[in-house]
Amino acid sequence: MTWLVTGSEGKLGRVLVRHLDAAGIPCRTFDRSPGERPDHRTGDVADPHDASEALSGVEGVIHLAALPSDSAGTPAEILRTNALGTIALADRALKAGCERFVYASSINALGVTGPGRPDDLPIDARQRAHPVTPYQISKRLAEEYLLYLHRATPLEVVILRPPYIADAGDYTTWHAPDFIGLPRSASELFAYVDLDDCARAFVLAAVGSGAGPGPYFLSAEDTCSEEPTRRLLDCWTGAVREDFDASLDSNEHRSLLDFTPTAAALSWWPTTSWRAASTAPFDHAVQRRTEYNDVT
Image 1: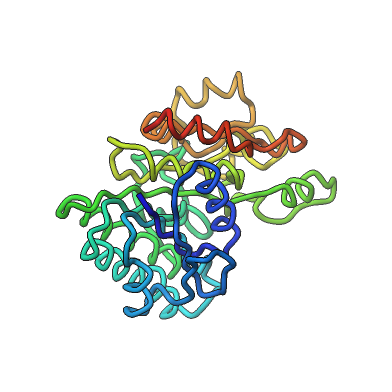
Image 2: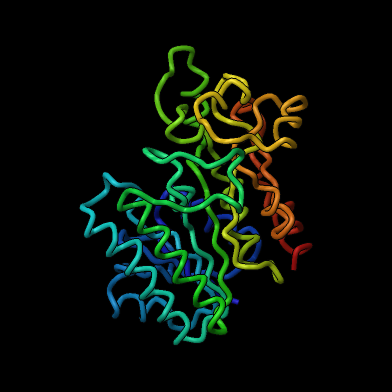
């Protein structure tokens, strides 16, 4: 099965393609920026000709391409690219005979980050969505349309919701004693996921079978704050799930995102914490190939 990876030249896209290569999974890359792979396609996912040409001959799509924040464009540009672009790409993938569509959504689709507030903690499948910014709305609209396609058509959809995607450079910054910037703040739920862990989740979503569409949260096991999670809970007024509060006795920095359904459905678990940033990332091709083959 050959996969089309959109947004392949971005931070996550480049690492994801390396994971796919290591697992022996054929892929074609697609981005606005030129790429070095022989089968790379340069274009805009929202352009009908570019998208149709990129989809020719592939069986699955991993859709990463997006304007990544409210500051990345005007509201109209964000909605055109993230919502309408995703809808158009998914429709064309269905017409092209693609079997699976893996979508990079965001925790922002819920509207609980930035100016939003969670109903209860930790954030889990019961959380109501109330997006309040163009970026949040664009991600939620795309999710809803993909869920419709999953229910009404043969296209199998899997939606992943990562928070901030962090790498070694971030960990170095966060370890600095004078660091006070984002994402170590309540506006981001103090949440992050390691770049390699995130890429691995998308591969598992692609090659796994039997999982529902989600959406599935991704997160490191811990927050990116030095403060214990019980102290962070004071930032919000919602109820705290009893079993979550009890679990803080064994993991005082536990993430505020509940990714246990992701672990159950996709056999995915985070392996890297910024608190142990010297730990070698999960980047051995043989280990990855074994893990993915075990799933399939």
